[in-house]
Structures are given as structure tokens and as C-alpha cells.
Image (cartoon, rainbow over all chains, first blue to last red; front, side):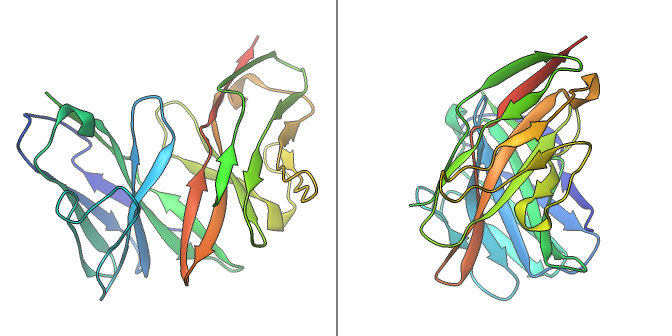
Length: 116
Length: 111
């Protein structure tokens, strides 16, 4: 399995500012994912961050708005830049970890962001 | 395009009654489907996957390719089953994989 921690767990920010969310995993993993869950909505994939390569963004998400770092196999950051109230969401880090048979995707506890 | 549909946003049943959470998918390839659950104040966690053909906490889900469905069932609901349930499809596009989630169903088990 994989145990994921995220910092901060929640934050309240002013519009126009940026927030960096950290994701730490207790084991080395190749694939890390960042999701957004807007109020009352499902999870939407923002980007996939593999160590040693540029993050791959999903349609509707761009690097200038959501820059991602992946410096090693256990850590990643997601920055929400130039925030607006529409960015108020829960941001989740996820990893694909190997099991005895196949893989399983594990999720962090999430970062609840409120933009005023 | 890949898509997962959970038609019921809310579902409420009485304890001991059968429960079925519906999930339909759209995917051109061979699907890999999952059910995730999020209990109150806990993180999202995997409940079961179709390839394992397992029963977890009394829940089962059968992949029906003809109906493109992966409904989650339990014959006798328990109060501790109250949670948010998400159906998810793992898709592979140009060597990259991702999970596509349905909208989720909030299940409430009444005593």
C-alpha cells in the first residue's frame, strides 16, 4: 500500500495570491496524480506527474495556472496560481502503487482551499 | 470518449434492505472498473475492482459489457455502509493512464 500526506490540510486565501500544496508518499512511486473536487462535484484529474518528466495536463488545465513539481519518487507539489473564488475546491494527491497483483490508486486526505 | 455515469446522486434505504448503486460507463477499449468509497471524515479508498471478482464488506459488483454497467450491490445494508460511493474507469490513452470518476452517490442507511 501507500500512505499519502498532504500539506496544508486546509487554507483560506485571498484572490490573486498563490498556494503551494505538498504531497508526500511513504514509498517510491512512479505515477502521481493531482485531482480537484469542486463543491458537490466529482473528482476531476488536473495532471499526471511522473518523476523525471514534465507533468501532463488534462484538457482545461494549464501549467501557468497549476504548475507542478516532481523532484523525486516520493514527493510532489501543486501550485494554484493567481487564485480566484472559482478555485475553491478540495485538491487531492493520488499515487498508483504496485501490489502483489496489479496496482492500486491511493489517495491523500486532500487540501481544502477557500478563496475569498 | 470515456465517461462514467452514476444516475443517483442520493440513495436512502433501510437497514437490512438490499441496496444497488448504479454505474454505467462508456469506453472504446477493454474496461477496468472500480468502486471507491469515502466514509465521513476519511479519505477516498478503493472498495473493489471488477478484475478481482471479490466481495468486500458484503458488496459485489459485476461487469456487464453488454449493458456497459458495473452496478454495486449488497443484499443486506448496514448502517456503517452510509458513505459516498464513486464508480471509476481506468482509461489508457497514448500510453498514459487515468481514472475517470462518476459523479458519486451518497448512500444513507436508515436504522
